[in-house]
Image 1 (cartoon, each protein chain N blue to C red):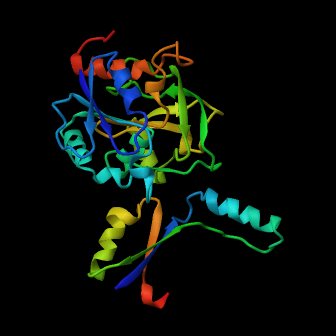
Image 2: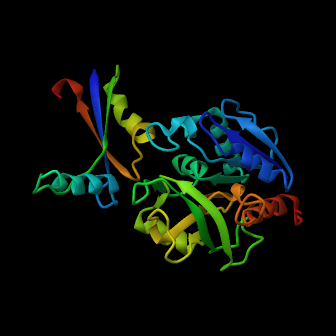
Image 3: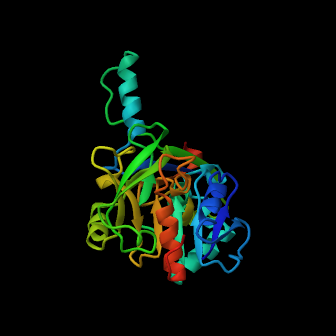
Length: 76
Length: 226
């Protein structure tokens, strides 16, 4: 299965990358943008999709500071 | 004291750490792919960019064969010091609470850090007194210490906050100005500033970093090191 894992900074933790992007957009003339957060996307082929959650908890994300979301890559 | 410094692909401060430790005892390098800790009394996980800091700082290094041995060594009470990237690795390994996040200003900052000793009740700061100031360089992009509020309260109550940046000098936005923390058992200590770069006034603004290594040697050898 082709899978995608979205990793985001946990809500409530200061996200300076998101703030920097949010401040840069108005400078380019894009107004009305708020709540910008920057995370990362990991795409992978995996034989056993049931192992994805454990992969996220052990390596792909740090659950203390990040939330993760597992998506079926075919839908993306 | 015989100390070992772990060398990962991407480490860059391991030789300075070895030189600093050799002022208070014997110091060897430990290769990341080797499980054998060579009978050392203490382990230092050094600064740098282990495994390129891919994925997250410290995330890959934490699973190296040497770190598996270091984790077992720490669980048995062995002294483990993590400096900068080493601090990040120890947090990822679960040997220290919390995590290090990108600096609030998103820039790499290299400057002398003025630190306040909060706890001298550790093998790493026993040669200091609470309130002592240490002047030690710090240089990092990902040094903003974070732990959940309830964890921070537990740490403060248990004396696990060992070093803070002096009021008004926090270089990275760390919570409560935290610069260094220890585990509940007090045998694992991590800090963002680099004591190994402050062991000789010829090449640094102070030799305050030596007090950390001398404390470790004193704890291991039961005497005050030179």
